[in-house]
Image (tube, rainbow, N blue to C red; front, side, top):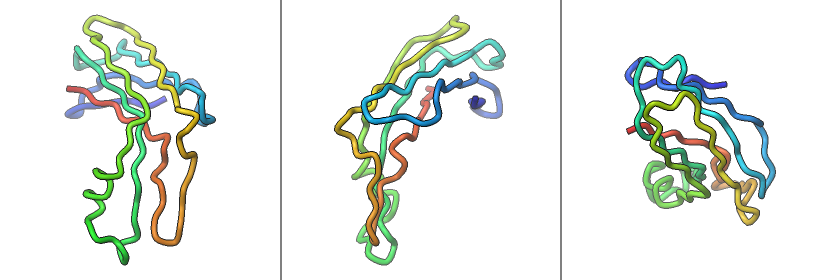
Length: 118
């Protein structure tokens, strides 16, 4: 369970059904707005990955590398004004790389879940 805050006000509680997933399985969860102090009218959730390159061999900043190598695997968008709970499912493609690492770079955790609240 994770609390989601914006400007120090509770927006929702995020319940993830599982903490570890295999390729091809969906990341499923529930957003609970019952104890929210800030109303939410729209929600966007992204499952994405990006690369990290060792500073000694990087030709760009880490922010530029993350922006260029960012890959969105799946997304979920919904209008949720007045909802008490909202379930979502983000499929992990079977073709996604589960892990990648060399002496000069690595794949950031591909299971990172970003919740965007406008």
